[in-house]
Amino acid sequence: MLNPEELVELGQQGLNKAKLLGATECEIYLISGSNTSTDLKNNTIQSSQSQTLSAIGIRVFKDKSSGSVALTTFNKEAILKSVEEAVKIASVAPPDKGFNHLLELDNGSTYPKVSGLYDSSITSFSEHDLLELGEIILDTTQGIDERTVTNGGMSLTESSIGLVNSHGIAKSAKFSSTSLSCNVNIKISDNNIGTGGEFWISRSINDLRHHAENISNIAVEKAQKTLNSKKIDGGSMPVIIHGRNVNSWLGQIIEDGISARKLYEGESYFSDRLGAKIMIEGLSIVDNPLYPGGYGSIPFDDEGAPTSKQEIVNKDGILQKFITDSYSAYGLDLPITGHASRGNPALRPSPGIHQLHVNSGESGSLENMIKDIKKGIYLESSLTPFGLKGPNLSEKLNTAFYIENGEILYSVRDTMLGGNVTTFLNGITGVSSELVEEFGRKTPHLQISGLTISGAK
Image (cartoon, rainbow, N blue to C red; front, side, top):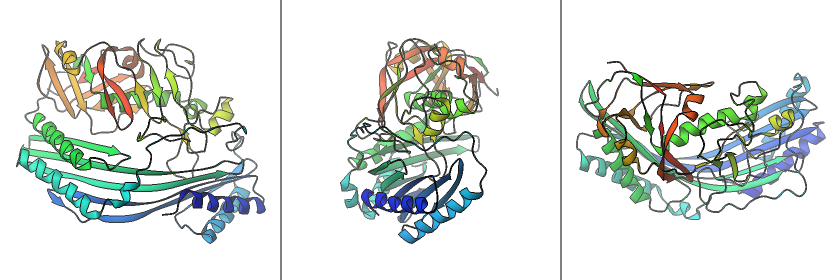
């Protein structure tokens, strides 16, 4: 694995080559790292696998025309050849009339310090240690319920990133990450199968054995609770959503609405709502990429702009800002907010939320919220991607339970949840006094009224 400084040096050599070839602008994004992982399949520990992580994305511009090349070879010759190829592509590409220029910052721009992003002790964690974690997971699940069939995995990753562009951006950082997952099935019959899953992600290797045992306990408990599930009648009823799901659902709803790329492309459902009320009062939605050790924490975004803690929606329910990458910021005359996020390192980034923090409310504990429901649904977790299409949402409920007179009676199956962004944000009628704080995220449990439950009874 190359260190961050070496990545920046390679990138600078690529920038120099692009300039010599007549490029007006160039950006190079580099990732170097290693990953060791072990899978669990059908109660069996698979052998560990180690792989090198390497990716380079090169974007070259000749005025408003661009050329992009991706490669995985980390040597000077390959990078310079790829820069040459990107310049050739840009020379014949049609101009992008919406492009202004790559990220350019004032000389006085400063970057925050974010602690806990790299745990150097990750290098001392061996493949044998990973196998031991697998044994803990299997021993725990089988020890609780011998009917369990367990799948999952353990992974350790360390990586360096480097980012340079022709306007003087030159940033680098080093990261570590660990992940554990446990997915359990308990089959009584073809029509009675309990499923449960749990995971743990962190920047640190601290207490991994404890977390392996803990996620196994939770996964089995979820699988047992979803046995003997029943179909229910549909209708409009309150839904209590666990804080972890609130993070993913609320996060995606807000992110899609405040993305300046979607605003630029005419797809934002908050396009005319800046400075206006978009949701109930009482909740402050903050993006905090500076939280120590957070899984979404980072001192700069994927274009090299400094990050900061920012309030997206204030407690009056007022939308405070759109989040930008440089393309959308310059195209819409909006400020650079430090939210550029990449999938493919060779493609244009898009704005994305780093790490959601939402304040607690006054509805008490999760248990108290459930006790106040006469007839409704408790959504503990969802295994499918959140179904948001424009302002409309649709989601199959996986680990969800029917509530009647303040008691959870049974898990539900063949059940869909439907609604829209407005219904969701303005239908929040309960906010727990406790927060789910994990992986650098903070979100309460929410009660939503006005959503439609489609049953198959």
